[in-house]
Length: 273
Image (cartoon, rainbow, N blue to C red; front, side, top):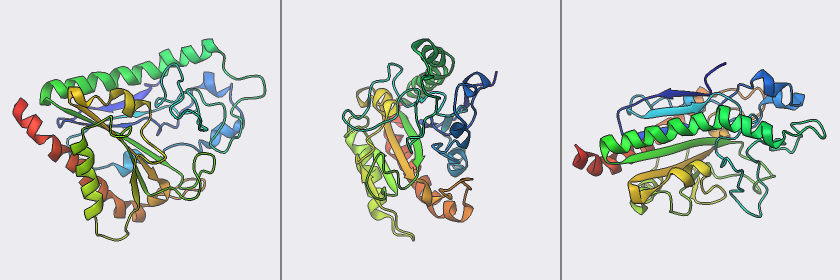
């Protein structure tokens, strides 16, 4: 059995989480799914490659190996709806973003199967994520969690029209200190290189379970989610090819944003040392 996540430990107070990049579907789950699952269309494609500056910045990195069709690591284990009243996908999604059924009629996973996936795939990821945040906080006096996501720029099920390029979520300023959000906003306001990227804080995406659960600014653990439009760095149509020419344009901005997190954290980290 393959490891349900990849983990690389770093030395800075920054942890980058990528819960939706996985493309593996264990055979025991695959046999339950319809063929539409094989397209993996709702994957946050290529983010480990896009965030190739993580090691240079000393960041720890954790990312899923399994597809979100197996289990969604950015949902609570009790499947609480993150956006009450809005259409969302659940802990074990029953359909794709395009509302294509992932299971044959009458064959949705039962409670026992969902719990099996929670124990086998969900819990290990979250145990490692929690442990690393606590390690970073103990070492530096502060930890910053950057939850990295991407999505097609147009998904009518979830939002009308075209999504802004960069969608920052801080649970309406509850998952991180105001100062960190202000520092990130300043980076975006001062960004002058071409192309210009549109952005919003706490718009359609306010942060999922990971951001909301682990962001505890009162304990000096600060969490920010970034949901990027995939058109910034890849082709949005199958086979979802990475576009190095596009990626090279947005990567300096990503690096600036991550470096800003570290600069903002430095006073607390320095005090700890």
